[in-house]
Amino acid sequence: MIGKFITVEGTDGAGKSTQIKLLVEYLQNKGFDVVVTREPGGTSISEKIREIILDVDNSEMSDITEALLYAASRAQHISQKIKPAVAAGKIVICDRFVDSSVAYQGYARGLKMSLIEDVNRYAVDDMTPDVTLFFDIKPEIGIARKKNVQSLDRIEKETLDFHYKVYNGYKELLRKYPQRIKRIDAQKDVEEVHAQVVEVLKQIL
Image (cartoon, rainbow, N blue to C red; front, side):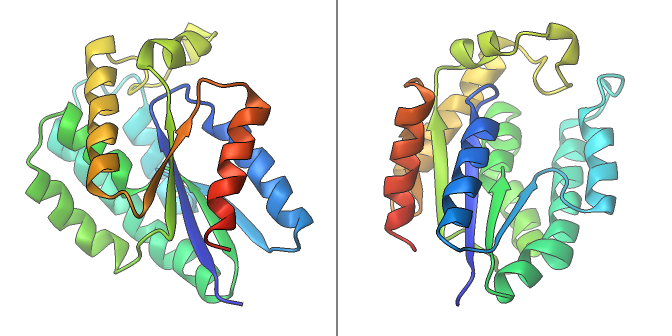
């Protein structure tokens, strides 16, 4: 079997974690070998970089440092975990990937898109998702879902204006890559959202 690479994107509080669990269950029941991972993170080295990026004490981190750390985490993740799993015929589901860097560091932070694209071109080593699920939810609704404010990380603590820039960035990516990125209406109930995900997956499996 040829492996597949599925990425899941969206603003904070879009319900990605819940839907990934349901998707894994669905795929495993169909007999697929599934690997679930996340960004930043996914490997021991990448998880250590994640801690640095999201630590609320690192408020002085520059935008370019943030972008390069995401790319460094991604490079390790691709080489050590994602590529080998897909090559072995597994379905890899990754919570966030390059689109997050474009939306957060490009559209929201205002870094040059050419910089984000160039750095990540080296990081991903020609690895492109077979499909990207964009969980579309208004930022204020997603943020309201984050009940325990104390647990918010450095990125989640950003202003609503910042999260709207991220959201609009994702909408722009959706328009730019309609073949790869599929919109999921994340404001519906859990079962309805899962049904949308399944319909998209049927097209690539």
